[in-house]
Amino acid sequence: SYELTQPPSVSVSPGQTARITCSGDALPKHYGYWYQQKPGQAPVVVIYKDIERPSGIPERFSGSSSGTTVTLTISGVQAEDEADYYCQSADNSGPYVVFGGGTKLTVL
Amino acid sequence: QMQLQESGPGLVKPSETLSLTCTVSGGSISSQHWSWIRQPPGKGLEWIGYIYNSGNTKYNTKYNPSLKSRITISGDMSKNQLSLKLSSVTAADTAVYYCARESGVVVPAAPVGYFDYWGQGTLVTVSS
Image (cartoon, rainbow over all chains, first blue to last red):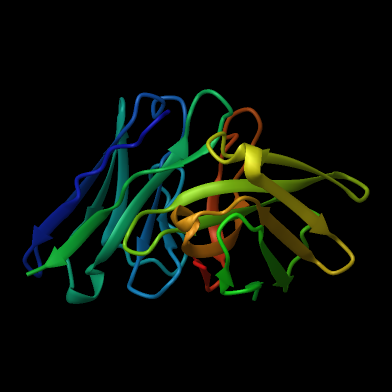
């Protein structure tokens, strides 16, 4: 079955830039979306259509896409950004919704 | 402001059927896709399936192929609710179950959208 691959963990110090990647063969054809999930809460979309930021999401969150990889970038990381981040896209068969395995962002 | 609220038993016995309902307020299930998504404790998100209104009171569905044989998702427009039934459950089906609205679907350019509204989630434990 189709998979989106994310690093299990990323660690950064406050004020630094965090980059979380998501790789999948179908990404050149389908948009990538990103969610932030804090403990005990439902996920919140922070990036949609590869690069778009929903209203209410801080400008330090940005997205990019290149070939089979989409990337979530958090510039000037703050302690409150510590969370799990999931990418989401589609496979080429259904197409069906697919989630990446998630990346735990730790703010040192 | 749209709100989604899942409800149903928190404990289901192995081999039985898990049944959940999602009540939507501040919006209508007559438009867009409405999904069920689950998350086992300490693990990642898994899409279960969605319904969408294909006209009048009819709903079409799409299911995760890995779960398709055990899933039924239905909608009740009069109550603005969607429901999930998952049969023959095992301990592996223990998870927080979310309902969510999918936005941004544009056929054929973007056949899969993103989830902009979620319920708070409900934990279902499969145990005897």
